[in-house]
Length: 472
Ligand SMILES: [Zn+2]
Image (spheres, rainbow, N blue to C red):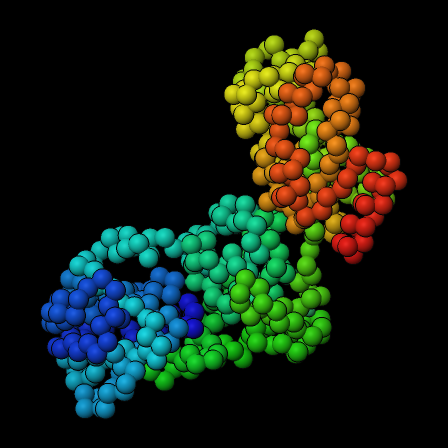
């Protein structure tokens, strides 16, 4: 499939061949190529029109004439050829423009996936409003594309970075070949979930994209599989590919054998050593008073990194912080104790008795905790990170996790623990439990379940089994 550099090569080549040439006739042999216009209108509109400019956006070619614009997408196999007027018509040539220099400008497409759109305008802004163009992201080699913009677009996506970079609405112009090259140059494993990447990673992606595309355009694109650019131009970039199509060959940096694997449905090449699959994040959740801390304490004693959402909340609402200020603004000075700190007991009472207020408080606290977890996951050198979040599913923290452990206990134990720990009446304890997602629902969403209703040694045994399954 032609990618941005190939299409750019086609554009540059056509520019030298058909610019300022007038169309004297149009013949259409396969009208399904035309996306938004019938055969007669296409033909009648274009006769006597002259090619004034040939532009490109991503993989779209834009032929700008006197009064009209043709948008062409080559898809899998589309090509343009220039031939003599009397040259025999190939069965794959679906559209032929006769030009006033007695040249036949032909669209050739063996798989017939390519499309052409006719617009009754030559204004670039109006052209870019055509839906297929309007939804495209900034071009990967656009110098105004900032790392912050790219990070903003990818940091909430759980899909592997390979798939995210192929999404033309996120970043326009990278296809399968170039995404592999960009990931290699950025030292990113293509399977890394996009939401695990940092701003620095986004910066590496943009810098690598610019470098790869500039080199490929200079070399005239690649000629992998069946694609060769039109008019006898053969891409040479395949000679410079670092990992794509290099399965079983040594990595140009470290010599490790390049792997081929299917990621997001596409054949993907990478070096296991230069692009290690990074961190695994395991969420720990469970309803209130099911004994999550028993598990997190055990993991900490074994030396694992555990991020505790409750501890992060405490740190985030210290006097003067952004969260502190937002909470005081929402709840007033009554929320503060004599020292001016947020009174946790008062806050808890509001959270558990006032539905509307709880939602507003959560809207302040959850994104801040999420951001802090993300930051700590990104910074740490640890490969396995546990995050303990009571409202993991409710607040969308499962997006940060590769797997989730749900801690459960029987209702009697839960109620007894809660009443004792928080000095609550039976009625209040029941209310608090009812205000959360049910244990059953949480278990259904989790990968692992730990039954914490019996002796502690039985709980520990289950944690060890999970660690064993994680290979840690
Ligand atoms: Zn390597």
